[in-house]
Structure formats: C-alpha cells, structure tokens
Length: 575
Image (cartoon, rainbow, N blue to C red; front, side, top):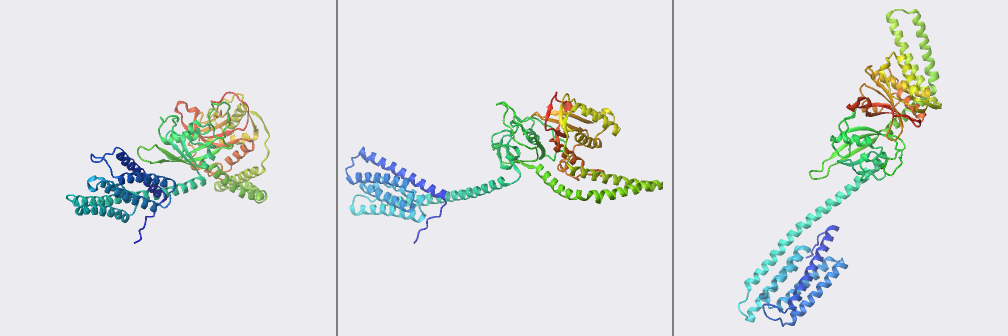
C-alpha cells in the first residue's frame, strides 16, 4: 500500500518543519532528564547498575542532538527525517523500558511522546503503525513475564497502555488534521487577498482619478499617483490637509462633509450654497508660491490652478477600528479643456467662411428689414420686423465675438490704477444700464496697480456685470466688486451678486464656448472673458468663497474671481 503525504502549501510546509524542530527540542529535554536521572543513580529507590541503560541514555541524547542539527540545517526529505526520528525514539524507549525492568518501571509513558509527534506530522496510517508497534512490544514483554515466572504478569495494565496509545494517536491526528485544514484555508485566503491587493494597487495606480484615504482628523494615509499629482505632493502620507498650504479648500470640503465642526485642527465651515450634494464638492486649488522661512510648513506645488470635483465615501470597518474615509478626485479642468479644444476646432473651421457666408447675408437681411419698416406700419408687421431685427442683431453679435476670438490680438498692458479704473467703469456702466449708484458697491482698491490691457479688462468686467444684473435683486450693494490678496500674496478681483449661486452642473460647462442658460445669450461671453484674461497673463474662474460683506453670518456663495499675474504696487487689502 502506497502512503500519500498531503499536498501542502509553502506556509504549511514551513509550519511542519517548525513542528519537527519543536519535537527535536522536546527529545533533547527528555535526553537531559534521563542523563540527570542516571547521574543521581536513582530509580525506584535503588542504584542503577545495568550498563545497557546508561549506554542507551547517552546514545539517545547524542541522537537527539544530531536530529536537531539535521532538521535545522538540512530542511529536505521531511518524510525520511520524520520516519528515522520516530523509529529511533521507539527503539531507544524500548531498550530503556527493558533495561529499567519493564512495565513496573513506568517508562512506558515515554511512548506517548513519539506517538503524538507521529500523529501530528505523519499520515494516520503511519501513526497507527507506530502505535501498534509500541503496543505489541509492551504486550510481548508482559507475556514474557509468564515464562520468566516473575510474579503475576501485568497483562491488563499492558492492554490499557495499548488502548491509550491508539486513543492518543486518533485524537491528536484528528485535531492536527483540522488545524492543518484551517491553516491551509487561511493560507489560500491570504494568497487570494494578496492577489486581489496587487490587482487593486495596479488599478488604483493607473486610474486617472485621484484616490485619497483620510483619517477622521484629516491626516493623509494613502494617495495614488493621480491624487499626488492633483494635490502637488510627493510624499503626502502622514500630512494633514489643513497643515499643507494651498489645500485649504480640500480641508474645508472634507470638514463640511464630516459634519463635525469640532474636529481638531479643521475649521468649522458652513455648507456652501450650490454644492453638488452631501457627498460631493467642487474646489479650486491655486498655484502655490513658496514663502520664505523654515516654519512656513509644507506646500502643494502646482504651476496651474486645478478645478477638482471631490466625492467622499466612508469606510465601514466595524467597531473598534479607526475611522477612514476615501476621497475620489476628478480633475474637471482637463475635461473642460478637452471640451473647449473640440469646440475650438469646429469654430476654427467655421470662422474661415463667416465673413462672406454669414455676415453678407445678415447685412442684406438687416437692410431689407429696415426698408420694410419704412413702408409697413401695422402692429403685426412691426412686431414681426422687430423679431427679425433682434435675431439679426443677435447673430451679428455672435459673428463679431467669433471673429474677435479668432484674431487673438496682442494686449497692450500698461499699469492701470485699479481704484480709478473701477470708479470710471462703475459710473459708465450705471449710466448705460440705468442703474442706481448704490446698487454697485466697490471695495477700496487703495494704490493697487495691475498690468492689464485697459480695453480688455473693461470688456471682461462689463461681461461679468452684465451677467450679474440679470440675477441680482437690484437692492443697494446687490452687486459687489472688490480686490483682495489671497493667502499667497496674489491679487484677486472679486465680482459677486446676491442672486442664486451657479449650480455645479452649470459650473462644469460655464466657460465652454456656445454654452448658455439664457435664451438671449450666445454662449461666448464668459468664454471670451476668460480668453482675454489668459491673453493678459491673468485667470478667470468661478469659485465658492465666504462673503466678506456678510459680516458675522459668514455666508458662503459663488463669485467670479480674476487672478492677476503681476501686482505692481499694493495698498491695503480691500474689504
């Protein structure tokens, strides 16, 4: 009969070798005890004179040392090593058993040591075979006492030993088999988990969206390459969001989502109007400029602003496990730029034929409409002619915007005194639109000067103010313009009205060409305004910020922010 050893994993084979080493240590301990027993020459109260007993003890201790060294330095052929060790144990214990006087010596208990080892490390058949050899030897020795006529033969006691041997082997072997099965299952689960973790690492590392794992206090535990690139951090692990310059918007959005204003280290922030939902937020990270001083703290290094969409998810790890949250970050700027490039490609082909194919027919339609207006005076005819004239003017304005965009004129950037420029613009705009002066509030610009083409800046602000009066309540200070320095010393010009904020869905397409929410708009105004800012080295964006005019209410709403490229002379910050 061929005995099959179980196929084991690498972890289980290592466990078997450790168990065999433990068996060798136990064997060495038993050998030391036997040698001490021999040294004190004590056995049942009389001196041991049989030299076979002493020789067997010494030989057994030497074999134990040899097996221990062999198992430690030559971890090969496990079945052969185990069989040799068990056979040596049975032979040595049998010799000691005979030399000590048989069953009355009590050394039969030593058989349990190799039998238990065989039950754990060998298949059940081999373990039962070893138990049968030990039982047969004890029964034969007891039977020999009948012929030796040395008193009543202890057959009953010998039989009980045999039963105990088989019971121990069966019990230990079943327990060991169950433990080995559990270890194999755990090892397989560990391998599956390791494979799944490797797959997750590959997916997370290659995914385009950023993945950020945060603690409840805002500490960064893990960040994939996309998240590190978006945040501008090389080694973010261990940092706190609120401790990194330039990541304050992300820290504030995370604090709002956590819904706990008392979180240590994170400022209490009221919910922002117009945000996407309870688990989403839109933030803008501005370029970080290194500030001097060793105590300035780490900063997020970015060359361009990043418009990010954040989505939060809480990790449900159970009670007693530190709370973790996952933040998924999507760079909306890349999507906006891609959509813009696609539309610009179409618009570039369109502008080549606009002058002759669109403007000339528009001029003819407009001239014909004017001639008809001189002859037709009925209410219905006048209304229809007005509709035609309005639509001709609208299309003509769209054509002018497209042609202006295609020209890409170089700006004539001179230092502009911002305070005087805004005052003149306010007076002109209020007069043109028929607005009261108190409706448009200007923050103090002091002696601030900016480098920007005057005509371009006027066109940008007129466009923003035109959008503002469409939604403002027309109450005093319902439209506000003020300059402000950001935390990095960059000058910003804020334009805000008291109307409803722009929703995130609209914000995602706000600066795309031909996108509009108004039936009377062309969808090019804000796009042209941003292009003019870029042409002057500035940036135009729509951000969710705290309203400084709201006082202690700290109301958060959206506003247009122009970030200037250069500050020539700065006065006090506008309030």
